Length: 194
Image 1 (tube, rainbow, N blue to C red):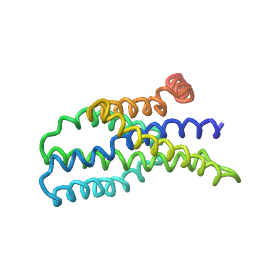
Image 2 (image 1 turned 30 degrees about the vertical axis):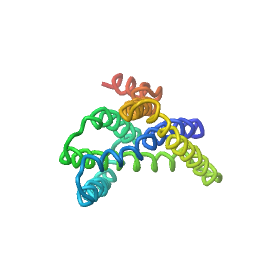
Image 3 (image 1 turned 120 degrees about the vertical axis):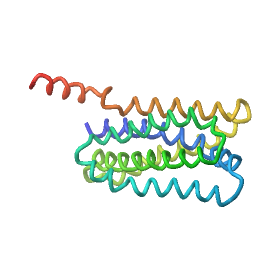
Image 4 (image 1 turned 135 degrees about the vertical axis):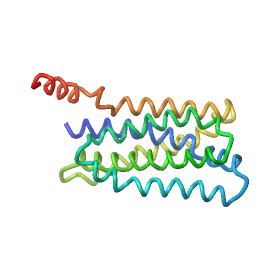
C-alpha cells in the first residue's frame, strides 16, 4: 500500500517540481524587471526565506493535528492562484507580498513532502525508495527548465505562468484528501458516529 502511495506522491510532486522549474528562471527575470535595484531584488528574496523560516515552527506544531496532504494541497492551490496574479504585478510592493506568500507556500510543501516521503518509504529499502523519489522529481525539474525556454519563445511568458498554475492545481487534486478514497470512507464513518 505504501508503494502505491509513494508512487502517487512522486507523480503529484513531479508535477509541482515541473511547474516550479518551468517558471523559476523566468520569474527571476520578471522580479528584476519590476524592481529598480539589486537591494530590492535582495530584499524580495530575503522576504521569501524569512517567511518560510518563520512558518516552519508553526507547521511543525500543526503537523500532528493535520493530515499532511493538506499542507501539499494548500501549497499547490495557493501557488496555482498566485501564478494567475503574478503576470499582472506592476510594483515592487506587490512583489514583496508575493515573495512572502511564496515563502509560506514553499514551507508547507517542504514539510508535507518530507513527512510523506518518510511515511511511505519505510522498510529496509528506504534509501532506494527515497532515491527513486528524488530521481523522478529532479528529472521533471530538468525537463521543465528546458521546456520553459522553448515555450517562452513560441508562446509568451504569460503562457508559462498560466500553464504552471494549471499544473499546480492538478497536483493539488492528486493529493487532495477530498479526492482520496480512504478520506471519503473516514468522513462517512465519522458522520455515521454522530
